[in-house]
Amino acid sequence: MLIWYKIELNIFEGCDILSVEKESIISSLREVRSELERAKNLCNEMTDEGAIDYASYNLLAVKAKYSYLLEIAKKMDLTI
Picture 1 (spheres, rainbow, N blue to C red):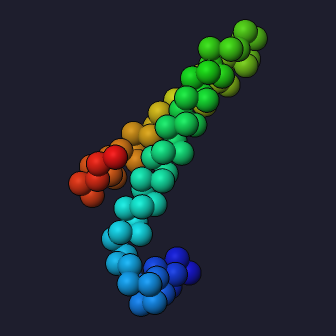
Picture 2 (cartoon, helix red, strand yellow):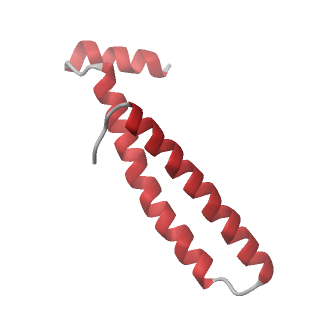
Picture 3 (tube, rainbow, N blue to C red):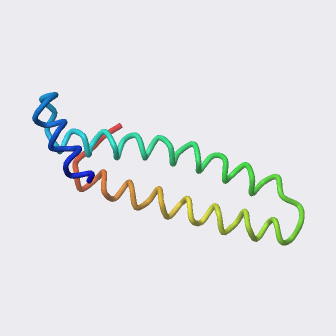
């Protein structure tokens, strides 16, 4: 379904597929940056041992997500 959407954009709006993907990666990176900041704040605010574990795992997951998106952006030669 997503492929058809990109094709429709390409035909009707003059966008190429690569630019749509680049915009999506950039948008995702911006979202994950703010998610990373929230995860850091959550980790710093927790006092209960179970909550600290949750916040730590959440922070690790968000960092992995951010690293993955950065890797994709580097492969596409994107800069923000």
